[in-house]
Image (cartoon, rainbow, N blue to C red):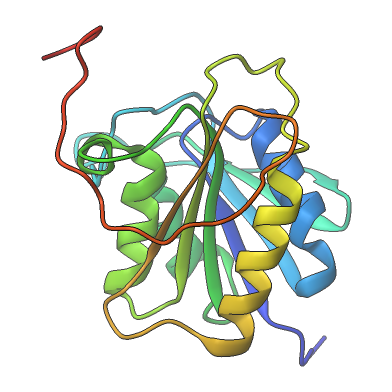
Length: 195
C-alpha cells in the first residue's frame, strides 16, 4: 500500500533481540514507517565488514509495535545491504542504528558495527544516525535516550543532513540528558582494553 510517510530502516550491532533496537522503534514509530533489519547475534566491533564466505539468510520475526522485524546471519552492513536489495520495496528515507549499549565516541567509530551501518547509509546518500548509550549493561534503563532520539531524528527529518555527513550520537549514562553539544570526534584510545 503506497504511503507518504518516510521509510525508516533501523539496524544495530547488538542483535535483533537487543532492548535498544526495540526502544529505538518505540521512539520513532510516530515519525514514519519503520522496518528493522538487524543481525541474529551480536556483532560489536565489526566496523564496515561484509560477509563474503557464507550464505546470508534473512528471517522474518513477529512484528513489534507496528514495525516489521527481520534478522540476518551477518554484520550490520550486511543488514543494510540486504535491506536495500532484498527486503525493502522502496529506498529508505532514513537509516538509524542503535540504540547501542556502550559508547562509540572518538576513534571507536572506526571499529563500531553500529557506526559501520551508519557509514554505509551515508555512502548511499541516505541521512543516517547512530545512537549509543554509555553503558554496556543491557538491563540499565535507556529512557534518557528518548528525548535525544526524538529531537535529533525529527530535526534531521525536517532539515536533512549535508552530503556525505552522518551523525554519531553518544548519550551519557544518566537519568536525564541536560543538553546536546555538537563536536568533532576526538582522537583517543582505550586504556582499560586494547591500547
